[in-house]
Amino acid sequence: MRLESQLPPGPLSAAALEVNGDAQRAIALASSLASVPRPGEGKTAVLFDTLCTLALADLTAARVAEAHLDARAILAQAGQDAQSDHTWGVFAAETADTVLTATPEGDRWRLDGTKPWCSLAGLLTHALVTAHVGDHGRRLFAVDLRQAGITVHDELWIARGLPQVTSGPVDFDGVGADAVGDAGWYLRRPGFAWGGIGVAAVWCGGAVGLARTLYDSTQGRAPDQIALAHLGAVDVAVTTAATALAAAAAAIDAGEADGPAGSLLAARVRGIVARAAEDVIFHIGHALGPAPLALNDRHAQRVADLQLYVRQHHAEHDDAALGRMLVTKGSAPW
Image (cartoon, rainbow, N blue to C red; front, side, top):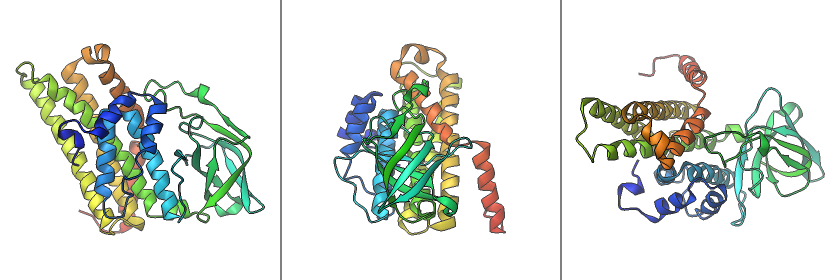
């Protein structure tokens, strides 16, 4: 991907640097990005570049912006508007021991139960939330998070990575909500896969930020063979990730990433970028040792942030899901 910060520092990079891990500043920055293109409208590469550039500077800024922009794109796909003064999250995670149900109530819906992994629920104004609708599966709802009946459990968030992007469970007790699309639409729509690739764009930007730290370390003194080997390996990792994202953006805009093709593309790209991020973290640690982790606040925070965020890729479980897609195709894809 083309990153703004390959040029002299630009306004987007500077604004993300100013966030410096602060959730409130990240929300304010995200709400200012109304002009960023939505995926599938011909400029998906610009969206991915934006997310990469934000993450290169500050992963909190990118993490918050990605969810806000994804929610706005989902609403647009559903033919609904997102007001400019609303700040958005997307709460769609599921666990075996929590359930959120939706019940019709007049011309609206009532939400009851618990939703896990609700990032910044105590700071955002709105969220798109999935809930179970009887025997019809899951349906998506728009929820005003400022109303009564919502209890946010930020106290359960003890992470050292993305520490201010609190992502604990939220209890809903008779909370009013508006349906977005019909039952199952959220998972069926082409943009579901595209949103997952947007998350990978953030991982890529975080990895590039670490790669630049390694590169800068080679400029003050002549690197030895070990340092050069780590630098070469990091270059392969970030170049592979960026190439995969650029190809994905082109496929999305060409109409080649809908339905099963989109799911397969997202699984591949997320796997490629997640592995690249993990490789970069490994090589940075081996090349630079403990000093930057102990003495460089920005670097130490970026490592912790990226290690946590990339775990949204479920490692071997997601690899197995990809393998299942390939077997189902019935012919070798290579």
